[in-house]
Length: 617
Image (cartoon, rainbow, N blue to C red):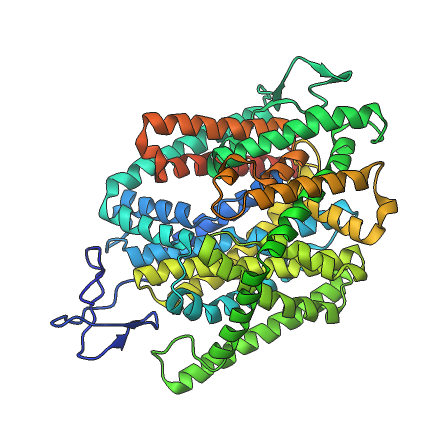
């Protein structure tokens, strides 16, 4: 290979020799005749790590708020690649050498690793579910739980990298898109400037709206409700209206028109039809948002169960083949080094360090679970063993479809460990979901690096540092946000946490713990979800016109006003794309990311002011 298929001044990688050689990624490549060796590019630099970790810290803080409010986060890779390039392009005097694409890759790897820690720690679903059940845990326990899970997932991702990324060459679309974005902005600075301008404008506008809605002076209402009543209940009580939420506008832009309309449909069915009926016939204790959401969670729960198990049932052969492939992959890589460019003693040392890291992290995780959560060390080890297999399957699914079924595997694990009680089932699910998230995140980063011919070691170090920084950030931010915004309220729905809590209660309490007609709601929800899964499977043309079952179920728990705002965001972006074709690409994503970041960051600032007593609602 004479050079990369795209030209980056000062960063071309040239390989020489008459035989096949190995670049610093550890992947076999074929040289071209006449190529000459070049100095290795700047890659794992202090400036790349500093900027990447700073961006990652900001994204991690915002993702805590975003995840609890909308069940959606910014993965960070594309945003960080754009922002890190823009920073050095703007402040050229800060650097003697141009900021190269390999440094950009390190920056986005570190940032994405930090941004995803809200999932790894379980701060979007398992931990808030426990808190909603009355269990409050010390900050050190939340931190140690997440960082140990991250270390196990990072080592497992490193082991799986060669098989999934190199040998099987799975597409991992997000990783591929990240590499393409890095190529694009370094080749054409103008595209980066346009995207950054849109992102910054969106951040500022969203931040201003959030301040005048939640801060002081409070000039903007939380939502504009319809001037109607249904069954004697006002639209405001039923959350029927449009929320003044830039975050939900951005969420709608991200999930697209079908997903957003599915959210809206779920909200309309739940809050305009089922909620008035539940109030009229006394299925809820009162007509408050919390009481209504506590009943509506059951039809949504049935639909979520359908989206978990029906695809598994329909595709059991593929799932079995994937599980066998994961086990086969594990046998093949046990004796293989993750980097073939080093000497045998170094390979043995790397293997020893990896095994030692996993064992130490697993021991600390088991100790934390026992000491802080009352979770049996034996159950911790069992959940970890299951998480290795499921994380491998999750990584392969992410590689083939760009969707990591983390939530589904977490639910399955809750059911497997239901005999230990609701707390044990939630913590076991948290182990599997956290480990699977870290593995999938690392594989997306490795795919981008492989496409760019980047260094494995540089990316792995960036991932570890990103996980540490993200872990340090998300725990205190989570504590601030949950103190300022009550979980399960209209202002902070915590939809994923409500779902995990409902699963644990349904598994442990039996039918007697359900509200009136709760079991009927579960059965009907499961039936509807199953039909949608069957009709929408594969490449069915009909599936493109049917609502998404998972989005429909989320819309049933989320305030209808938020679902309406998401649909508005998707509709506005669709119309804008017809007038401005550039929004069909990365510029639309930059606009959506800015809206998410603007509200989430100001939401965290407001939460800090509330916690410090400087602001009150």
